Length: 122
Image (cartoon, rainbow, N blue to C red; front, side, top):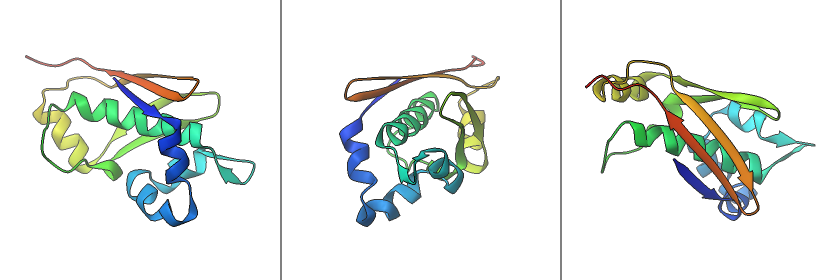
């Protein structure tokens, strides 16, 4: 589970912060967060919460987060689907993850919250 303050995303969508956001979200994810020609902080917070929740499934600490190797397909009105590639797929395998990742996301007031779940082979 992860919770992201939408105000954190408001900071990330400022033009001078877009290089940082581009390291966290892939171009197609940024496009999915675009509403009426601008980035929607609520949508950005949701994508970040999904990614952070999935990263927690890997049980990794003190290592760089492989932001770009985890793809969230989704957008307004669509159920998010997680796709793992490269380093994220390696971490999932090392953690014993044996099935696809299910995610749920919600927004309430100042927060975006996501939960991620999968089967772990013990």
